[in-house]
Image 1: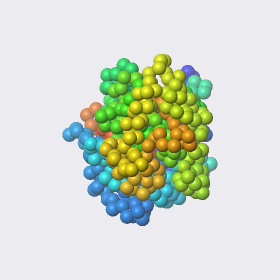
Image 2 (image 1 turned 180 degrees about the vertical axis):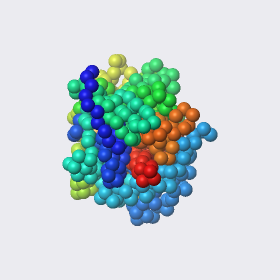
Image 3 (image 1 turned 60 degrees about the vertical axis):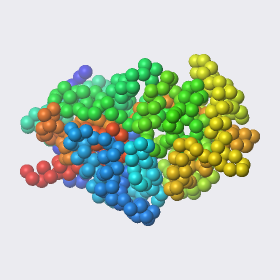
Image 4 (image 1 turned 135 degrees about the vertical axis):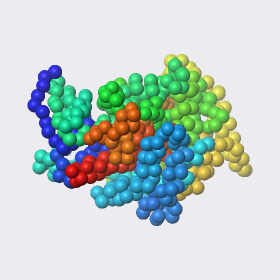
Length: 542
């Protein structure tokens, strides 16, 4: 490695994801000189937020009021505590949860509105809870334009500062070691193109490097190992450059890491059809009306797996199964209405803000997406009969695990609840589907319960092979409400900040055991703005 001349600035930010960009924008508005160090290329600036669907858990919004949802910060906080299941030692995570509940409207929602960001008018109801109550009412807001439009909007705001030299973004540079001192910090940075090392001298250092589970090794050793299942495996739905190395470097300098074993993963991943790295996964939003089966084609139970209520429960259940894959069995009518993929890339009508196309997909079903997945992924199978479907399912595995007669029996046991004379339903999956359909936006995306084998000539059968997929770190570097980094004794390390997923979205684990969903993009914005506000106040008080 060769040494090159130093850089100087007011604040250096390690990471160009949503948290780093928001923090930079707030500091630049106050005349600070800022350097962003980002490991990715210019067209991928914004990190995972660029590819995110753009959902946010928000309360007391205009969208909620128009739908007559009587939400408030106290109710959000109580729901949050229910899902988080904080321990008595979780002082800062609990403080951040309260901070989010009380200030998401002003610091996130209104801030986005001022940028010109709009939300879809329908507020969705996710993570309602299975045994433990979750969201007691709808508060999941989707950005019109997805995370892609959010990132492009923020980059547009940053461009004048790039042009005048106030902001410098070092692409394909890796932050390797903060050097902390009383006078001025510095950040050692590796240029990954020419192997040169740069020292950036700065008043403040902000860690915004994302979580640790871009490395599957971290995800498996910290999260998956708790299930004591040697056959368990998972795909990577995070960014591989968020590998946790900077976390460990900081820990070696006395920084406190907490709740590293807690992660927000998903149970419905498939290998990405356009994989960019090893084990690259694509996260599906599983269909509520599909039967969720194990590797042998047996329905998983005794509680049937149904999405939208407790994602953490789904992951735990799948992680304990004998084989590292499951199956969803559905038909074409279910698929076109319910099947979805998380993220901006597979939702072009929302990403590109094409209202007519979006409404057509909502009313008539998204056949484009179903056909795309069948064409591009060998994990999405289509057949005219149960026998043919079982044969295709067995072709994907090392031996014939699925017996067509057993598969047919599993489907027929579910279907027998629907007869021409009378629907005699006594199934927890159906009860949850009916509950979901009570809310109008969910009714649009959830089929009326019906037999899966109905009209087999015109209603093809579909099987999707699913795997666990790593997504977000819920733990991280512990911070106070100013996003200042704390040491092992709980003391503030002066002029060192941590924001976004690197900080476990605040306090080293503000979500606790599990998330109400939609707390990630917004949590990045909140922690970033709190960090910027604290730095600006300290500068003004000198």
